[in-house]
Image 1 (tube, helix red, strand yellow):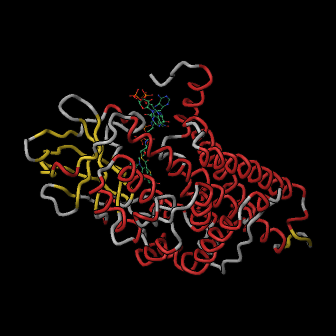
Image 2: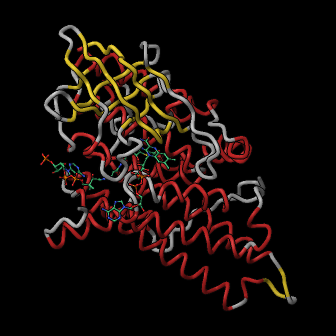
Image 3: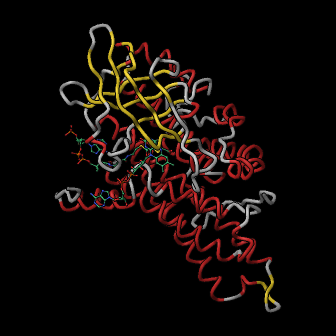
Length: 392
Ligand code: TGC
Ligand code: FAD
Protein backbone atom coordinates (compact mmCIF):
# COMPACT_ATOMS: atom_id res chain seq x y z
CA UNK A 1 0.00 0.00 0.00
CA UNK A 2 1.14 3.57 -0.70
CA UNK A 3 2.52 5.50 2.30
CA UNK A 4 -0.14 6.40 4.88
CA UNK A 5 -0.49 10.19 4.60
CA UNK A 6 -3.87 10.34 6.40
CA UNK A 7 -5.05 13.70 7.70
CA UNK A 8 -8.33 13.63 9.57
CA UNK A 9 -11.05 15.96 8.28
CA UNK A 10 -12.70 18.14 10.96
CA UNK A 11 -14.78 20.63 8.99
CA UNK A 12 -16.92 21.86 11.89
CA UNK A 13 -14.19 21.98 14.54
CA UNK A 14 -15.41 18.94 16.42
CA UNK A 15 -12.12 18.81 18.29
CA UNK A 16 -13.46 21.70 20.38
CA UNK A 17 -16.14 19.35 21.72
CA UNK A 18 -13.56 16.81 22.90
CA UNK A 19 -11.73 16.77 26.23
CA UNK A 20 -7.94 16.58 26.48
CA UNK A 21 -8.32 12.92 27.43
CA UNK A 22 -10.44 12.19 24.35
CA UNK A 23 -7.81 13.78 22.12
CA UNK A 24 -4.93 11.93 23.81
CA UNK A 25 -6.68 8.58 23.47
CA UNK A 26 -7.64 9.27 19.85
CA UNK A 27 -4.21 10.51 18.84
CA UNK A 28 -2.49 7.50 20.42
CA UNK A 29 -4.80 5.17 18.47
CA UNK A 30 -4.27 7.20 15.28
CA UNK A 31 -0.49 7.03 15.56
CA UNK A 32 -0.58 3.33 16.34
CA UNK A 33 -2.75 2.60 13.29
CA UNK A 34 -0.37 4.57 11.08
CA UNK A 35 2.66 2.79 12.49
CA UNK A 36 1.44 -0.78 13.01
CA UNK A 37 -1.68 -1.36 10.89
CA UNK A 38 -1.27 0.60 7.64
CA UNK A 39 2.03 -1.05 6.62
CA UNK A 40 0.72 -4.62 6.97
CA UNK A 41 -3.02 -4.52 6.43
CA UNK A 42 -3.17 -4.75 2.66
CA UNK A 43 -1.01 -7.86 2.71
CA UNK A 44 -3.13 -9.43 5.46
CA UNK A 45 -6.32 -8.71 3.50
CA UNK A 46 -4.86 -10.11 0.29
CA UNK A 47 -3.82 -13.27 2.15
CA UNK A 48 -7.17 -13.39 4.00
CA UNK A 49 -5.43 -13.61 7.37
CA UNK A 50 -6.07 -11.78 10.62
CA UNK A 51 -2.72 -10.19 11.58
CA UNK A 52 -2.29 -11.69 15.04
CA UNK A 53 0.89 -9.72 15.61
CA UNK A 54 -1.17 -6.59 16.30
CA UNK A 55 -3.13 -8.08 19.23
CA UNK A 56 -0.68 -6.73 21.82
CA UNK A 57 -0.84 -3.25 20.29
CA UNK A 58 -4.64 -3.28 20.27
CA UNK A 59 -4.54 -4.04 23.99
CA UNK A 60 -2.02 -1.26 24.59
CA UNK A 61 -4.15 1.45 22.97
CA UNK A 62 -7.09 0.35 25.13
CA UNK A 63 -9.09 -1.23 22.31
CA UNK A 64 -10.00 -4.29 24.40
CA UNK A 65 -12.56 -3.10 26.93
CA UNK A 66 -12.09 0.68 26.69
CA UNK A 67 -14.97 1.35 29.10
CA UNK A 68 -14.52 -1.75 31.30
CA UNK A 69 -13.40 -0.68 34.81
CA UNK A 70 -9.69 -0.75 35.52
CA UNK A 71 -10.18 -3.25 38.38
CA UNK A 72 -10.96 -5.83 35.65
CA UNK A 73 -8.09 -4.78 33.40
CA UNK A 74 -10.12 -2.41 31.19
CA UNK A 75 -9.11 1.15 30.36
CA UNK A 76 -11.95 2.76 32.39
CA UNK A 77 -12.64 5.33 29.67
CA UNK A 78 -15.90 7.02 28.73
CA UNK A 79 -18.08 6.24 25.74
CA UNK A 80 -16.67 8.99 23.52
CA UNK A 81 -13.12 7.70 24.03
CA UNK A 82 -14.39 4.21 23.19
CA UNK A 83 -15.97 5.58 20.02
CA UNK A 84 -12.86 7.48 19.00
CA UNK A 85 -10.70 4.36 19.38
CA UNK A 86 -13.12 2.44 17.12
CA UNK A 87 -13.06 5.32 14.60
CA UNK A 88 -9.28 5.24 14.40
CA UNK A 89 -9.02 1.46 14.15
CA UNK A 90 -11.62 1.29 11.37
CA UNK A 91 -9.79 4.10 9.60
CA UNK A 92 -7.16 1.37 9.24
CA UNK A 93 -9.47 -1.56 8.55
CA UNK A 94 -13.02 -2.66 9.47
CA UNK A 95 -11.80 -6.21 10.10
CA UNK A 96 -9.38 -5.06 12.78
CA UNK A 97 -12.13 -2.95 14.33
CA UNK A 98 -14.36 -6.04 14.25
CA UNK A 99 -11.90 -7.95 16.39
CA UNK A 100 -11.82 -5.10 18.90
CA UNK A 101 -15.62 -4.66 18.84
CA UNK A 102 -16.28 -8.32 19.43
CA UNK A 103 -13.70 -8.56 22.21
CA UNK A 104 -14.97 -5.43 24.00
CA UNK A 105 -18.69 -5.24 23.46
CA UNK A 106 -19.71 -8.79 22.68
CA UNK A 107 -17.42 -10.74 25.01
CA UNK A 108 -16.15 -8.49 27.82
CA UNK A 109 -19.39 -6.50 28.10
CA UNK A 110 -21.69 -9.51 28.75
CA UNK A 111 -19.23 -11.04 31.20
CA UNK A 112 -18.99 -7.69 33.00
CA UNK A 113 -22.74 -7.03 32.99
CA UNK A 114 -24.27 -10.51 33.24
CA UNK A 115 -21.47 -12.66 34.67
CA UNK A 116 -20.50 -13.76 38.18
CA UNK A 117 -17.63 -12.15 40.08
CA UNK A 118 -15.60 -15.35 39.50
CA UNK A 119 -16.19 -15.14 35.74
CA UNK A 120 -15.14 -11.48 35.72
CA UNK A 121 -11.94 -12.24 37.63
CA UNK A 122 -11.14 -15.27 35.51
CA UNK A 123 -11.73 -13.83 32.04
CA UNK A 124 -11.78 -10.01 31.92
CA UNK A 125 -8.10 -9.23 32.70
CA UNK A 126 -6.91 -11.82 30.15
CA UNK A 127 -9.30 -10.47 27.52
CA UNK A 128 -8.18 -6.89 28.23
CA UNK A 129 -4.50 -7.79 27.77
CA UNK A 130 -5.15 -9.83 24.62
CA UNK A 131 -3.90 -13.02 26.26
CA UNK A 132 -7.38 -14.40 25.51
CA UNK A 133 -9.41 -13.63 22.39
CA UNK A 134 -13.16 -14.09 22.51
CA UNK A 135 -16.02 -14.50 20.06
CA UNK A 136 -19.80 -14.09 20.23
CA UNK A 137 -22.19 -16.71 18.93
CA UNK A 138 -25.70 -15.48 18.21
CA UNK A 139 -26.35 -16.01 14.46
CA UNK A 140 -27.31 -19.50 13.30
CA UNK A 141 -27.64 -21.00 9.81
CA UNK A 142 -31.43 -20.51 9.86
CA UNK A 143 -31.66 -17.52 12.21
CA UNK A 144 -29.82 -14.34 11.21
CA UNK A 145 -32.01 -11.25 11.47
CA UNK A 146 -34.37 -13.24 13.69
CA UNK A 147 -32.06 -14.58 16.42
CA UNK A 148 -35.02 -15.20 18.74
CA UNK A 149 -35.77 -18.34 16.69
CA UNK A 150 -32.41 -19.97 17.58
CA UNK A 151 -32.29 -23.74 18.07
CA UNK A 152 -28.92 -24.08 19.83
CA UNK A 153 -29.80 -25.42 23.26
CA UNK A 154 -28.55 -26.36 26.72
CA UNK A 155 -29.86 -29.17 28.90
CA UNK A 156 -29.37 -29.22 32.65
CA UNK A 157 -27.58 -32.49 33.44
CA UNK A 158 -27.27 -31.87 37.18
CA UNK A 159 -23.57 -31.10 37.53
CA UNK A 160 -23.12 -29.55 34.03
CA UNK A 161 -25.00 -28.32 30.95
CA UNK A 162 -25.03 -30.25 27.69
CA UNK A 163 -24.74 -27.86 24.74
CA UNK A 164 -25.85 -28.74 21.20
CA UNK A 165 -26.28 -26.71 18.02
CA UNK A 166 -24.30 -24.51 15.63
CA UNK A 167 -23.54 -20.83 15.07
CA UNK A 168 -22.22 -19.35 11.85
CA UNK A 169 -20.60 -16.14 10.59
CA UNK A 170 -18.75 -15.73 13.88
CA UNK A 171 -15.92 -13.16 13.92
CA UNK A 172 -12.71 -14.36 15.65
CA UNK A 173 -14.13 -17.91 15.91
CA UNK A 174 -11.22 -19.78 14.26
CA UNK A 175 -8.71 -18.71 16.91
CA UNK A 176 -10.85 -17.60 19.85
CA UNK A 177 -9.97 -18.94 23.28
CA UNK A 178 -13.53 -18.51 24.55
CA UNK A 179 -16.98 -18.07 23.01
CA UNK A 180 -19.93 -16.27 24.57
CA UNK A 181 -22.76 -18.44 23.24
CA UNK A 182 -26.50 -17.79 23.30
CA UNK A 183 -28.63 -20.92 23.68
CA UNK A 184 -32.13 -21.87 24.79
CA UNK A 185 -32.76 -23.87 27.96
CA UNK A 186 -35.49 -26.51 28.41
CA UNK A 187 -38.06 -23.74 28.99
CA UNK A 188 -37.06 -22.01 25.73
CA UNK A 189 -35.42 -19.08 27.57
CA UNK A 190 -32.24 -17.64 25.98
CA UNK A 191 -29.17 -17.92 28.24
CA UNK A 192 -25.56 -16.80 27.79
CA UNK A 193 -22.86 -19.40 28.45
CA UNK A 194 -19.07 -19.26 28.17
CA UNK A 195 -17.57 -22.09 26.10
CA UNK A 196 -13.81 -22.62 26.28
CA UNK A 197 -11.55 -23.94 23.52
CA UNK A 198 -10.58 -27.52 24.24
CA UNK A 199 -13.96 -28.59 25.59
CA UNK A 200 -14.82 -31.93 24.01
CA UNK A 201 -17.30 -31.67 21.11
CA UNK A 202 -16.57 -27.96 20.47
CA UNK A 203 -15.05 -27.04 17.09
CA UNK A 204 -14.60 -23.78 15.13
CA UNK A 205 -14.13 -24.37 11.37
CA UNK A 206 -13.05 -21.30 9.40
CA UNK A 207 -15.24 -19.73 6.71
CA UNK A 208 -13.22 -19.21 3.51
CA UNK A 209 -13.76 -17.40 0.20
CA UNK A 210 -14.89 -14.05 1.63
CA UNK A 211 -14.50 -10.99 -0.60
CA UNK A 212 -15.14 -8.78 2.42
CA UNK A 213 -13.53 -8.35 5.85
CA UNK A 214 -10.66 -10.48 4.63
CA UNK A 215 -8.30 -9.40 7.43
CA UNK A 216 -10.78 -10.73 9.99
CA UNK A 217 -11.15 -14.44 10.69
CA UNK A 218 -14.75 -15.69 10.47
CA UNK A 219 -15.96 -19.16 11.32
CA UNK A 220 -18.59 -21.49 12.69
CA UNK A 221 -19.11 -22.71 16.23
CA UNK A 222 -20.18 -26.34 16.38
CA UNK A 223 -21.42 -27.88 19.61
CA UNK A 224 -21.77 -31.64 19.65
CA UNK A 225 -22.80 -32.70 23.16
CA UNK A 226 -20.38 -30.24 24.77
CA UNK A 227 -20.27 -30.58 28.56
CA UNK A 228 -20.09 -27.04 29.92
CA UNK A 229 -19.52 -26.57 33.66
CA UNK A 230 -22.41 -24.90 35.47
CA UNK A 231 -20.17 -22.09 36.64
CA UNK A 232 -19.83 -20.95 32.99
CA UNK A 233 -23.48 -19.83 32.74
CA UNK A 234 -23.89 -16.05 33.03
CA UNK A 235 -26.71 -15.74 35.55
CA UNK A 236 -27.53 -12.06 35.71
CA UNK A 237 -29.61 -11.57 32.55
CA UNK A 238 -31.48 -13.80 30.13
CA UNK A 239 -33.93 -13.55 27.23
CA UNK A 240 -33.20 -11.99 23.82
CA UNK A 241 -32.65 -8.64 25.54
CA UNK A 242 -29.33 -10.00 26.93
CA UNK A 243 -27.54 -10.41 23.56
CA UNK A 244 -29.33 -7.36 22.18
CA UNK A 245 -27.93 -5.31 25.08
CA UNK A 246 -24.41 -6.29 23.98
CA UNK A 247 -25.31 -5.37 20.40
CA UNK A 248 -26.27 -1.86 21.52
CA UNK A 249 -22.71 -1.35 22.71
CA UNK A 250 -21.14 -2.88 19.60
CA UNK A 251 -23.44 -1.05 17.18
CA UNK A 252 -22.54 2.22 18.91
CA UNK A 253 -18.84 1.45 18.29
CA UNK A 254 -19.58 0.66 14.65
CA UNK A 255 -21.30 4.03 14.21
CA UNK A 256 -17.97 5.64 15.13
CA UNK A 257 -15.91 3.10 13.22
CA UNK A 258 -17.72 3.74 9.95
CA UNK A 259 -16.77 7.40 10.19
CA UNK A 260 -13.12 6.32 10.28
CA UNK A 261 -13.46 4.31 7.08
CA UNK A 262 -15.28 7.22 5.40
CA UNK A 263 -12.63 9.72 6.52
CA UNK A 264 -9.87 7.56 5.08
CA UNK A 265 -11.65 7.24 1.71
CA UNK A 266 -12.39 10.97 1.55
CA UNK A 267 -8.87 12.00 2.54
CA UNK A 268 -7.31 9.64 -0.01
CA UNK A 269 -9.62 10.80 -2.80
CA UNK A 270 -9.06 14.49 -2.01
CA UNK A 271 -5.28 14.13 -2.11
CA UNK A 272 -5.42 12.09 -5.31
CA UNK A 273 -7.79 14.52 -7.02
CA UNK A 274 -5.46 17.45 -6.28
CA UNK A 275 -2.46 15.58 -7.68
CA UNK A 276 -3.97 13.80 -10.68
CA UNK A 277 -3.78 15.95 -13.82
CA UNK A 278 -6.02 15.31 -16.83
CA UNK A 279 -6.76 17.77 -19.63
CA UNK A 280 -3.91 19.92 -18.24
CA UNK A 281 -5.42 20.54 -14.83
CA UNK A 282 -5.93 18.65 -11.56
CA UNK A 283 -9.17 16.65 -11.65
CA UNK A 284 -9.99 18.35 -8.30
CA UNK A 285 -10.61 21.47 -10.37
CA UNK A 286 -13.52 19.90 -12.23
CA UNK A 287 -17.07 20.46 -11.06
CA UNK A 288 -17.98 16.77 -11.13
CA UNK A 289 -15.14 15.73 -8.78
CA UNK A 290 -15.76 18.73 -6.52
CA UNK A 291 -19.40 17.69 -6.21
CA UNK A 292 -18.32 14.24 -5.04
CA UNK A 293 -15.77 15.62 -2.57
CA UNK A 294 -18.06 18.35 -1.23
CA UNK A 295 -20.88 15.87 -0.65
CA UNK A 296 -18.48 13.51 1.10
CA UNK A 297 -17.26 16.07 3.61
CA UNK A 298 -20.85 17.21 4.20
CA UNK A 299 -21.97 13.65 5.00
CA UNK A 300 -18.92 12.95 7.17
CA UNK A 301 -19.55 16.15 9.14
CA UNK A 302 -23.23 15.29 9.70
CA UNK A 303 -22.26 11.80 10.87
CA UNK A 304 -19.58 13.20 13.20
CA UNK A 305 -22.10 15.51 14.87
CA UNK A 306 -24.77 12.81 15.16
CA UNK A 307 -22.32 10.37 16.67
CA UNK A 308 -20.71 12.81 19.09
CA UNK A 309 -24.20 13.64 20.41
CA UNK A 310 -24.95 9.92 20.71
CA UNK A 311 -21.74 9.57 22.73
CA UNK A 312 -22.89 12.30 25.12
CA UNK A 313 -26.22 10.50 25.54
CA UNK A 314 -24.39 7.20 26.14
CA UNK A 315 -22.21 8.85 28.78
CA UNK A 316 -25.36 10.08 30.52
CA UNK A 317 -26.97 6.63 30.21
CA UNK A 318 -29.75 8.14 28.10
CA UNK A 319 -29.14 6.78 24.58
CA UNK A 320 -31.96 4.55 23.35
CA UNK A 321 -31.45 1.39 21.31
CA UNK A 322 -33.36 3.04 18.46
CA UNK A 323 -30.99 6.03 18.46
CA UNK A 324 -28.05 3.64 18.25
CA UNK A 325 -29.72 1.82 15.34
CA UNK A 326 -30.23 5.08 13.48
CA UNK A 327 -26.57 6.07 13.91
CA UNK A 328 -25.24 2.62 12.90
CA UNK A 329 -27.45 2.54 9.83
CA UNK A 330 -26.80 6.11 8.74
CA UNK A 331 -23.05 6.02 9.24
CA UNK A 332 -22.36 2.69 7.57
CA UNK A 333 -24.50 3.66 4.57
CA UNK A 334 -22.71 7.01 4.43
CA UNK A 335 -19.30 5.32 4.54
CA UNK A 336 -20.19 2.79 1.86
CA UNK A 337 -21.47 5.52 -0.48
CA UNK A 338 -18.32 7.54 0.11
CA UNK A 339 -16.12 4.51 -0.55
CA UNK A 340 -17.89 3.92 -3.87
CA UNK A 341 -17.58 7.56 -4.96
CA UNK A 342 -13.98 7.84 -3.75
CA UNK A 343 -13.02 4.75 -5.70
CA UNK A 344 -14.29 6.37 -8.88
CA UNK A 345 -12.22 9.49 -8.24
CA UNK A 346 -9.10 7.31 -8.33
CA UNK A 347 -10.06 5.83 -11.68
CA UNK A 348 -8.22 2.57 -12.38
CA UNK A 349 -5.86 3.15 -9.44
CA UNK A 350 -8.92 2.86 -7.20
CA UNK A 351 -9.24 -0.87 -7.81
CA UNK A 352 -5.69 -1.64 -6.66
CA UNK A 353 -4.30 -2.41 -3.24
CA UNK A 354 -2.01 0.61 -3.56
CA UNK A 355 -4.86 2.54 -1.96
CA UNK A 356 -7.17 1.55 0.88
CA UNK A 357 -10.47 2.53 -0.73
CA UNK A 358 -11.47 -0.71 -2.44
CA UNK A 359 -10.65 -2.67 0.72
CA UNK A 360 -12.82 -0.30 2.80
CA UNK A 361 -15.61 -0.63 0.23
CA UNK A 362 -15.58 -4.41 0.34
CA UNK A 363 -15.30 -4.44 4.14
CA UNK A 364 -18.29 -2.14 4.50
CA UNK A 365 -20.47 -4.66 2.65
CA UNK A 366 -20.12 -6.83 5.78
CA UNK A 367 -20.49 -3.93 8.17
CA UNK A 368 -23.81 -2.92 6.55
CA UNK A 369 -25.02 -6.52 7.08
CA UNK A 370 -23.72 -7.55 10.49
CA UNK A 371 -24.91 -6.32 13.87
CA UNK A 372 -28.34 -5.89 12.24
CA UNK A 373 -28.78 -5.31 8.53
CA UNK A 374 -29.50 -1.93 6.95
CA UNK A 375 -33.14 -3.02 6.58
CA UNK A 376 -33.52 -4.23 10.17
CA UNK A 377 -32.24 -0.93 11.57
CA UNK A 378 -34.73 0.95 9.39
CA UNK A 379 -37.50 -1.26 10.80
CA UNK A 380 -36.26 -0.53 14.34
CA UNK A 381 -36.65 3.21 13.62
CA UNK A 382 -40.06 2.49 12.06
CA UNK A 383 -41.15 0.63 15.17
CA UNK A 384 -39.84 3.39 17.41
CA UNK A 385 -41.77 6.17 15.68
CA UNK A 386 -45.00 4.27 14.98
CA UNK A 387 -45.15 1.79 17.83
CA UNK A 388 -45.98 -0.97 15.32
CA UNK A 389 -43.43 -3.78 14.65
CA UNK A 390 -43.16 -4.52 10.91
CA UNK A 391 -40.65 -7.41 11.21
CA UNK A 392 -43.25 -10.17 11.06
P1 TGC B 1 -38.31 -8.16 20.41
O1 TGC B 1 -39.56 -8.88 20.81
O2 TGC B 1 -38.41 -6.80 19.80
O3 TGC B 1 -37.35 -8.03 21.67
C1 TGC B 1 -37.03 -9.15 22.50
C2 TGC B 1 -36.52 -8.62 23.82
O4 TGC B 1 -35.31 -7.87 23.62
C3 TGC B 1 -35.49 -6.52 24.08
N1 TGC B 1 -34.74 -5.66 23.14
C4 TGC B 1 -33.57 -5.10 23.45
N2 TGC B 1 -32.86 -5.11 24.60
C5 TGC B 1 -31.70 -4.44 24.59
N3 TGC B 1 -31.21 -3.80 23.50
C6 TGC B 1 -31.90 -3.79 22.33
N4 TGC B 1 -31.38 -3.19 21.26
C7 TGC B 1 -33.15 -4.46 22.27
N5 TGC B 1 -34.06 -4.65 21.30
C8 TGC B 1 -35.05 -5.40 21.85
C9 TGC B 1 -36.99 -6.30 24.04
O5 TGC B 1 -37.37 -5.27 24.93
C10 TGC B 1 -37.49 -7.65 24.48
O6 TGC B 1 -37.31 -7.78 25.88
P2 TGC B 1 -38.30 -8.67 26.78
O7 TGC B 1 -37.80 -8.49 28.16
O8 TGC B 1 -39.68 -8.11 26.52
O9 TGC B 1 -38.15 -10.09 26.27
O10 TGC B 1 -37.49 -9.15 19.50
P3 TGC B 1 -37.75 -9.65 18.01
O11 TGC B 1 -37.59 -11.13 18.03
O12 TGC B 1 -39.02 -9.08 17.45
O13 TGC B 1 -36.50 -9.05 17.20
C11 TGC B 1 -36.23 -7.72 17.14
C12 TGC B 1 -35.03 -7.41 16.20
C13 TGC B 1 -35.34 -7.85 14.78
C14 TGC B 1 -34.85 -5.91 16.21
C15 TGC B 1 -33.77 -8.10 16.72
O14 TGC B 1 -33.90 -9.45 16.76
C16 TGC B 1 -32.53 -7.71 15.96
O15 TGC B 1 -31.88 -6.74 16.29
N6 TGC B 1 -32.11 -8.51 14.87
C17 TGC B 1 -30.84 -8.31 14.23
C18 TGC B 1 -29.89 -9.42 14.64
C19 TGC B 1 -28.49 -8.94 14.84
O16 TGC B 1 -28.22 -7.76 14.96
N7 TGC B 1 -27.57 -9.88 14.92
C20 TGC B 1 -26.22 -9.54 15.17
C21 TGC B 1 -25.40 -10.77 15.46
S1 TGC B 1 -23.82 -10.41 16.18
C22 TGC B 1 -22.92 -9.74 14.94
O17 TGC B 1 -23.36 -9.49 13.86
C23 TGC B 1 -21.54 -9.43 15.29
S2 TGC B 1 -20.58 -8.82 14.01
C24 TGC B 1 -19.31 -8.30 14.99
C25 TGC B 1 -18.19 -7.71 14.31
O18 TGC B 1 -17.43 -8.43 13.63
O19 TGC B 1 -17.97 -6.48 14.51
P1 FAD C 1 -31.01 -12.70 6.74
O1 FAD C 1 -31.56 -12.46 8.09
O2 FAD C 1 -31.32 -13.99 6.06
O3 FAD C 1 -31.45 -11.49 5.80
C1 FAD C 1 -31.37 -11.56 4.38
C2 FAD C 1 -32.01 -10.29 3.81
O4 FAD C 1 -33.39 -10.23 4.21
C3 FAD C 1 -31.36 -9.01 4.36
O5 FAD C 1 -31.30 -8.04 3.35
C4 FAD C 1 -32.32 -8.56 5.46
O6 FAD C 1 -32.29 -7.15 5.65
C5 FAD C 1 -33.65 -9.00 4.88
N1 FAD C 1 -34.66 -9.23 5.93
C6 FAD C 1 -34.59 -10.10 6.98
N2 FAD C 1 -35.68 -10.00 7.75
C7 FAD C 1 -36.45 -9.04 7.18
C8 FAD C 1 -37.71 -8.44 7.53
N3 FAD C 1 -38.39 -8.83 8.61
N4 FAD C 1 -38.21 -7.49 6.73
C9 FAD C 1 -37.51 -7.08 5.63
N5 FAD C 1 -36.34 -7.58 5.24
C10 FAD C 1 -35.81 -8.55 6.03
N6 FAD C 1 -23.08 -13.00 13.92
C11 FAD C 1 -22.76 -13.34 15.21
O7 FAD C 1 -23.58 -13.81 15.96
N7 FAD C 1 -21.49 -13.12 15.68
C12 FAD C 1 -20.51 -12.60 14.90
O8 FAD C 1 -19.38 -12.40 15.38
C13 FAD C 1 -20.81 -12.27 13.53
N8 FAD C 1 -19.83 -11.81 12.72
C14 FAD C 1 -20.11 -11.64 11.39
C15 FAD C 1 -19.06 -11.35 10.51
C16 FAD C 1 -19.31 -11.21 9.16
C17 FAD C 1 -18.18 -10.95 8.21
C18 FAD C 1 -20.64 -11.30 8.67
C19 FAD C 1 -20.94 -11.10 7.21
C20 FAD C 1 -21.68 -11.60 9.54
C21 FAD C 1 -21.42 -11.80 10.90
N9 FAD C 1 -22.45 -12.18 11.79
C22 FAD C 1 -22.15 -12.49 13.09
C23 FAD C 1 -23.79 -12.48 11.27
C24 FAD C 1 -24.64 -11.24 11.03
O9 FAD C 1 -25.06 -10.65 12.21
C25 FAD C 1 -25.83 -11.67 10.15
O10 FAD C 1 -25.31 -11.97 8.87
C26 FAD C 1 -26.91 -10.63 10.08
O11 FAD C 1 -27.55 -10.47 11.32
C27 FAD C 1 -27.96 -10.95 8.99
O12 FAD C 1 -28.37 -12.28 9.04
P2 FAD C 1 -28.36 -13.18 7.70
O13 FAD C 1 -27.04 -13.03 7.05
O14 FAD C 1 -28.83 -14.53 8.08
O15 FAD C 1 -29.42 -12.48 6.75
